[in-house]
Structure formats: structure tokens, C-alpha cells
Image (tube, rainbow over all chains, first blue to last red):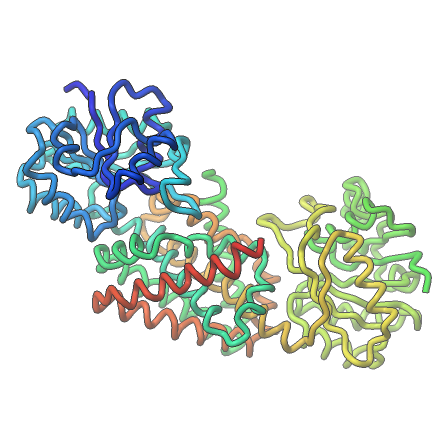
Length: 288
Length: 288
């Protein structure tokens, strides 16, 4: 398969950075973005994100050798339905969605043939979102997880893997189920907690004053609460079962600490803090 | 009062940075640190943190015009008892503890006379702790909250304020009660949640594998879980009432999200995420 034309649907930070990165690392073909208006497309060309802009989704995807869907999880199915009639048999369909089992279900329902479908998820982000902050180096040294099924053609997986590696990412294949369970605790749970924490402060009477005493630690802790509300809403809804499990596990651990605080149980508080600190030092800090 | 001699008790990141910063900004006197062993004292002198090292607490404080206590909250009272007999009448006693009402109670019980006591709290920290990472610029542009009472001499407050301002900090006075309530939500609550989150991941069977999929967002979210277990245990215990209130408020907000996830209530999830995102943009991001 020659990869002459890539079409990107959804040009926010994630899709935009994918497009911009490919252009800047010398992708030898045309990168077309699909936009709601010609103005938005023109802006993306000016920003160096895409080569061409289209407002007609079917026209854009019909000419593509590879389509990248980078839209909120609950918009995936509609986009698949819109592009399905115009896809060529050889066209690879990949995505950048944060939950993999629902994307696979949608793709199976809509496209039937999964041989050219390569589900993917780049584990990367930024405090700001939108095409204006698209960053050609966003994926350098970041992990990209691909969750192809047995039906997926190996050449399609290799092509998608090659694109991410061209952007500097470290690609790994795993099952969609394992992906969704792991990301529920490492990503989806922390997002829910960060949103809930900021919401707690925001409901205090002395609102702006309280925030004045928030230092760097709070700034870091709540950074992910600046994520796109729709994107994260969709993740919670489409990965509901795993997010629920993660929240229940967290609640059990939080309850231990709450009870220890209520009873002034110094040993338990210290033991949990120490265990958590050590786990973080061993598994998170040393890794980076 | 001439400030010829400052004595620091507790030379971790916070006390060490205070000492090192004063030396580097040209403090015109002697800075003495109190250490458990002569070797630790020698190391601190080599690191440029202090001018002199002492292992005899009473001897060190008896010669001081100002004593800075920078030890975990539950060690404050013992340190006050140890220094009380050797303090001169003019000696200022200040601290860097994260909870103010219990320090004031301890100081009143032990010292009786509060006229030279200036309770303080620098809102600053780092991922790493200990004297080795003491940083003369740690307090630049950081807030320092002082909570003097009506009994405190104004000249003592002014001297302590002057030292922090010499380090580049922004000093603000407020009541101890208001301090402890505000910090419970902006600092103590997030720490408990970060520790509980890492502890949740650490208890999963597939431990090291799960942490592999933790990206920058998780790294930021859990940074404060690298804090000193003893220091944070003591904060939770000494600010128990306010931490409990903050945890209960957080629980109510989390319960709304948990129920919304369980019921697939997209509107509620989106509304909370949007409100939190907007509050953070308005009150946290724009501030910095």
C-alpha cells in the first residue's frame, strides 16, 4: 500500500499534533483535514497543521489511503457512519480515542470488515486544547497503545505503527480490554478526582480568596481538570464499567484514610502515605 | 532589636531553603543550624546552607535573636519545651509549620508570653525533600502567610516579614483559623487524595504494568504524593477538624459524579467538568 494521502477528522490538539508532526517529519504525501468551515481550514493551513482543507467529509475520506479519527468518543460512531460509504477497500481507518472497546464495537457495527481498522490511543496531552496549540513534538517519547484484533491485517498495523514512530512515539500493542482497565485507573480516575476537587473549591463561599492560597502543588494536582469537558464526559460514559471499578477501588482506599483521620490513627495515615510515596518513587519517578 | 544571630531548628527543604536564601541574599549575621550529628552539620556548612552547626539545641537557641522552627507539626511542642528555658526575653520565635492554630496553642502552653511569637507558613514545596535540595530561591514569588495574634509585638512581625521579603516572598497576615480552613481545601485535601490515588494503583495486582501507562497528567496529579509522610501525617492530625470538613465536601462532590457515571447522566458529568474547568481557568491559571 502506498500512503499518498492521509485524512484527519477532528483537528484539536491530538489530531492537529498528529498532522503537524507528520508534515514536519517529512511525510511524503498529502495531509487533508476536515473542517466545519472553510475559515477554520484556512487557519489550519496557515498554522502548518495540514496541506489541504475540506469541508466535505465524504469527499475527503474517499481520496484517502488512511483516515485518522480524532473526535470525542461519543462522536466516533457518527463519523464512522458518515465515512463508511466512501472508503476504498484498502483504506486504513485508525483513531486516537481514549477508550478502545467501544470504538471497536462501533467500527464492527458500522464497517463490518475489521481488516483495515487499527484502533489506537496516544497517551499524551497538554493543559490547553485546540488546534492553536497543536505541537509537532507532542508525541516524542510518549507511549501510543494500539489494540488491533486478530482480524486486523498486519500491514495496516505496521503502517500505523510506522506513522507514530515517525513522530517519536513508543508504540505498544495490547488488548482493548486491558487498555481500558489500565487507563481507567491511570488516567480516567485522576481526571474525575481533579474535576471533583476543583468543583469542591469552586463551591466555597470565599471562592476567589481560597484559590489565592493554592500553590504549585495544587496547580499540578488540578492541571488535568483543564481538559476538554466533552472529551472527558465521553470517556467516563464509554468506559463506564472500568471507571466505576476504579472509583470504587479509590473509595475504599480513601475511606481508610478518612477513618484514620477521624480517629487520629497516626500509624495508618503514615503507613498509607509511606506506601504511596514509595510506590510513586519506584514506579513513576524512576521511570521518567 | 539587632538581628545578629538566627537559629534554625529543622533543616529539611523548608528550613534549609530559608537559611540558604538568607545567606545568599546577604544576611548580615550568623545563621546557626541545629543538627542531630556533627556530620550532618558539617554537610550543611559544605552545602552553603548555614554558617555554623550545633548539636546542642539549648546552647544554639540561647545565643539567638530569632529562632525558626521548621519541624513536623507533632514535633513542635517538644522543640518549644526544649528551647523555652534558654530563650532570651527579646528572642523572636517563628515557625514554618503548615497548620497554625495548633502551633499557637503549643506556643501559648509552653512559652506563655506570645509577644515575641510570630507564627508563619511559607506556601512552597518541591517534589524532593531534605537539605540536599535546599534552594535559596524556593520562596521567590511564593506566598508566606503570617498569623500573629493581638499579643504579638509589631516589631517582631515586621522583622519576620522582612526576612521572608528578603527571600523574594509575598507576605500576607491573616487569622490562624482562616489559614487552617483555607489550606485544608487547597493543600491538605489534595495531598490526601493524591496519596489515596497512588495507593489505589499500588494495590493492583498488575502493579508495575499499570504504572507504565501513566503519562504526564498522572505524574503531575500525583506529584504531591511524594511529600514527606511524617510531615503530611502530622498535618492531617493537627488540622483534623478542617481536613474532615474538606474531605466531606469533596465526598459530596465526588458522589454527584459517581452517581452520574453510574446512571450515564451525560448532562451532569459535562456540567461539573465544565464548571470545574472554568473555575480553574479563572482562578488558578490566570493568577499565575
